[in-house]
Every structure is written in structure tokens, then in C-alpha cells.
Image (cartoon, rainbow, N blue to C red; front, side):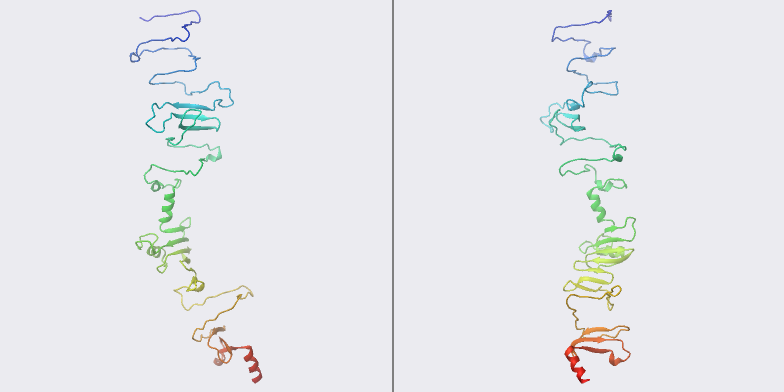
Length: 350
């Protein structure tokens, strides 16, 4: 039978100093309970709860209530988890989720305030991180130290999952994209026909289906590298330039080829075509040393509206420098330039 006690004022139960007051409702399995209908004020320094389940109706749990500050006087405030006997596992410290007043930051690590803390095994498992759009337009800033990098670990071939325009790529994704898109290429942003393409003779198999191979380059661009490794520049679908090991070809010209690697020649596929050096206005063709004319072994044919200079065996003029013009008189079309001494002799004879 229940009993009821009512008093007409405050009711105090005083035990001896250091003694214990026990409210015994029987073993926990019996379901007994102690009900406090008013506020419960504990003025001691510690509260121990041995309950298996702790339920709190209040939606906000406030720590260090009554702090006079400024800030957290004891620097740290938060939750520490007793991990029991950790001598056989790593890390061995308790786990803590704390606010650090000194750096205005939350700490997730192993250790007990005021530290030291260990963050080697610290991790946070969640699905999303939301930023505040009113600060830095919602930027997410990751601040580290030393040589740390941002990594994505634990997923299956992360680089293969980067398919959305807003996905964050990793280094392998970037390497693979450059390597296989669809060959070694730098392309215009909207897939126009202006690009830089690499073709390497050592790529095997050398087939039209193997990115980077010579055959693939020829099949996808309709151009050729003549069996050599090359970097080709294609502008508006036209082959503008190609870089080889020892030479550079632009238009119909080849620079750096030949035995001395300092020649300007026509492309290997271009024969019997002129090479033009044009100046603007009254500009002249100038050299700071000498002009060398090799002997072609044949007399060039005349060209309309032009005079040709070439080298041959010296004759009566002793210079070895010959000309071919487009004179209407065949006898005047070819001759040797005369040296100074010969010119004086001829002036006295004729």
C-alpha cells in the first residue's frame, strides 16, 4: 500500500556529513522509479548517471551554463567519450568532440582537454557539408599545413565515377582525360576543329583504334607524320604546323632539318616550289656576313619578270657568279658577272 507524506513548508532530510541518502525502489528490472515534479537542482560538483538509456525532452543541451566569459574560460567545452580499456588498440585515448575557444573551432580527435590531442584517426562520417552563402558566397575552404592534399579514398575507381559537370576530378581522371580524349589532344572548348594533337611512333598497337598511335592520328585527322613522332597543330581543320624531333614544319616550309639542322627547306612532300622571303615597303634582304651560292650543276631556266643569280665555274669574268634574265634576245639571257680587274681591261679594249 502506498504512503503519503505532506508537510506545510520546506522539507529537509539531513544525513551525517559524507553520508549517502538512498531512494530504494528495488532492483532496476522491477521498473521502479523516482518522480520529481519540480525542478531538480544539484549543487555538488559531479552527477553520475548509470542508466542504460538517457532521454532528455529539452531540445537544447547547454554546457557551462552561467559562464561569465568572455568566451569559454576553461578554453574547451564539449563531449568526451570514455573508450574503456584501450591498451590493445590504437589510438588509446578517449574520443572528444570539443569547441576550442582559443582558435574558435570545433575539434574532433582523441585526448582529454586541455590536450594534447591526436587527430591521426579522427574522422567524420556524413553525407553533405553545407556552407553559408552569406559568407564568401558559400565557399568551402580547406585549411591544412605541411604538404597535405585533399584526397578521395575508399571508393571503387573514383575517376570512373566523375561523370557530372560539377563533380570534383582527381589527378588520375585528369591524366586519363588528356590521354584518351580521344587521343593525346588539347581541343577547343566546344569541340571545334582547332586542336593540338600528339602522335607517337612507339604507341602499340599502331592501329586506327589505338589513341596516340600514328595510325590513329592519320585516321582521325586525315594528315600524316611520315612514320615519325610529332606534335601537330590543326587550325580550323587545316594542318598548320608540326613539331618533330629535329625539325619544325609550318605551311610548306621545314625549319631545322637537314644535316646541319639549321636549314629552311620545302616540306618533303613539296618539290619544285619557290620559297619566298618578302619585305614590306622598301625593306631589303640583309645578312651580316656573306651570301653563299652553291653550284647547282645546271643552268637555271629563265623566269619572266625576274633575274636569277647562280654559281658556276668561273669563265672570262673570273667571278663564278652567273645570271639568267628574261631578255627577249636569247644571247643576252645568260652571262657571268665581271670582276673589277676584268672590267678595267674590257673597258680599255672595247
